[in-house]
View 1 (cartoon, protein in one colour):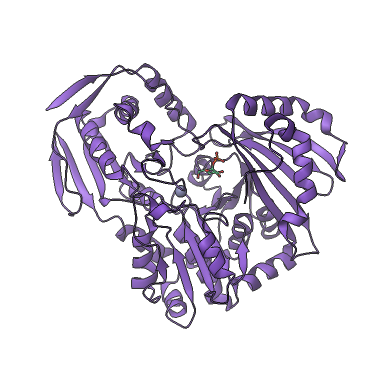
View 2: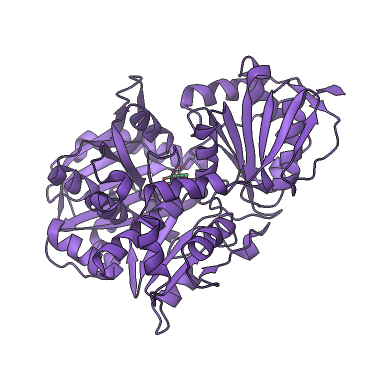
Length: 539
Ligand code: G1P
Ligand code: ZN
């Protein structure tokens, strides 16, 4: 039976860079999830002809939220739902399932790399038939619904057992529990040379894949161990846990410190990769060596010919404005089209759909390609393994060779967290006004050559978006300022600092960027406005 429940809006359901992301306890409030879901369905016509995917990264509330989505979708007359077995699906695999089966969209329950648990975060990434998160016009329409919602519809059908691959019905909706792994693995086999990778991984090559107790555990086991022959135990933190076993499932130098420590120890294996909670982010490490995401994108691009799926040529490449210029130097050399977009994977989607780009990436540990419409941590890992299998070089040798060829872009992101929203907004507004006056001025030896708000004109739908403020210096260095769109505690100001050199290739990034980082604080008056002398997090 379908029930109509009266409700009142929550006013904080605006989607950010990666869908709706909130404290778990916020989402647990009465009708919170229901209101948001009904608001989405209110924007979609002809639901009786529409099919959606549902799954998540296994975090706290994942299973329960899936049952709620099923009941609300059924009450709204959705034709069919595909649900990942055990309620699991990684973000990249979800994108592929939507595209391959021509679904109308999907709900991936994840706050990505944010911690889980009742005191952690929960999130909903709502994807459309593009296979990626909805476009700004769609999220605006949904946000509008959330502001005025007064009722939602829900079926009283029972909860379904999601452990079995079977078909259920709720109202007129068919619910099929599907294997969330098989199609994704097949796709990877079609991109990479699996026999060659198998030779590497079943040799004496020592490999670790850290799933950080997120959803890529089972994907990693099936791909690296069962298919490619890596020794059992090569995939660590391999069981998805509701609280990620206490880990902050963000694959970077801070939150994957256990892996970094291993790679800088005597016992270091040859190669390690980590993925975040929902499997779209990645970190790549060699023995005593860390690859920055900006360099990662540049190096993968430079090696595209080694991969069967790309050997006959690729379209262009794109990066977010916040990401370093390293990939542009490769694109220029290889004569590839190059695009710079705002932060958020949705901006890459138009460029992929119109065959303008094949590879893209962000400094925030995201690299991907046009096989799907999300970033893809396992894809990046397989790409690195392919380069190693082909060149027989270590991670460090591969990167060093790249720097010798193209120069090195030292890059750091400084995050100033938990700033009152008003303070942060004012800082950005005042800085924007001040930009023209900076030109020609010197800060710690760096002279400003250009300073402007970054405005992106989408070549496909001709809309403009503003995202961040950019300051260029005469030596090619850059600072980018922007506010995070994914935080759940106050505002986070991110400053992205980069400096390009052709010598001094093996210095400490923090030392190389110290004076430029200090200049970034002076220019934006961060310390006087926020009281923060130093960033809270440097990555
Ligand atoms: C952060 C990253 C951004 C990424 C997003 C979703 O967003 O910086 O690159 O697309 O998470 O994973 P931000 O908090 O900066 O808005
Ligand atoms: Zn993620």
